[in-house]
Length: 219
Image 1: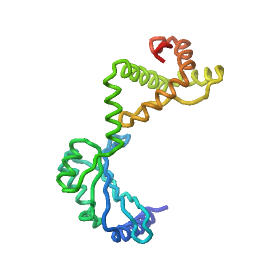
Image 2: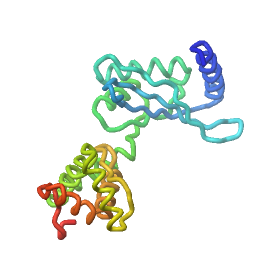
Image 3: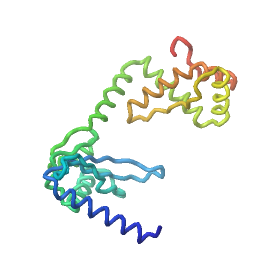
Image 4: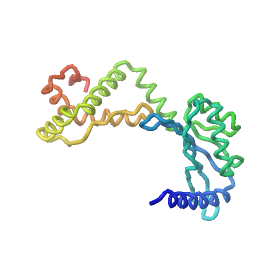
């Protein structure tokens, strides 16, 4: 598939989305900053609206912008205004949903849109704050994170864990590393650790890494 072919497909899809958006009376905007593995920064802008022809909800990514400037509220606001004006949605935005980062708060304030904080992000802050307030639980979180990181980076340990799982007749599931911005990943990390506790302890002892072990009362 050639570049020209891809560009034609893009323009065709863009026209369809623009036509659908043009019939919407209002829309909501969600936007988020993320980084690629090569640490490049991107700003994603998505429109959510009701299709007036069949009254179904639609969500369309309008653009994912490569940000080469500082992530200030002003720079983010400029990009949001540029994207929404290109798609003729700037004056249709009923509200914008973002995380609670200060630069996002500034950006939406500058656009003069109504602002709603992301529920998932707010929930994550609540859960992580609750964990941090409990010394024992936060210590357990740190220890589990260290253990999972060890098995993820050490092929020998990972392979040995699989063998021990087979010997103990434990499900051969991989350990899950938490993602700081996703509280449920912390839950899944704990859940998988509990499931694999015996296999993990056995493997660490065989590899002479007892320093990483959690004792049975904690686990």
